[in-house]
Image 1 (tube, rainbow, N blue to C red):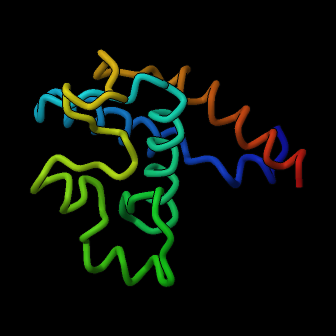
Image 2: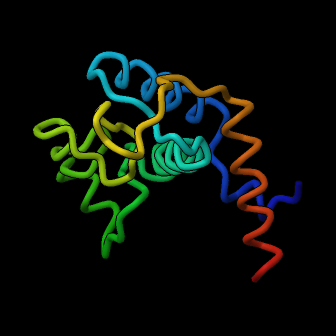
Length: 128
């Protein structure tokens, strides 16, 4: 993989930290990952990339005018305030059991994440 594609991916260290966090948080809050594991993979990759770039796992599913300012407010840092207060995850990473998109898993392997995200970012660069 070339350096341009690697620039779009999180470091292995941050990816493993965010993967472990997501698994533990799902278990602790009785929530489940999306039935489509590619959603889980892309969201965890995005959180890890923001951790690398911004120092915090800012929600990757929202648009921000100023990401650094958003990190400082902490409202959209994962787990975001809506998730903590109402179990509402905009990214569909943490879903309550009654959510129609909830799967039955609270785990995902590093290999599953990389298989999805490396393919995703390679396809994006080819289309550009």
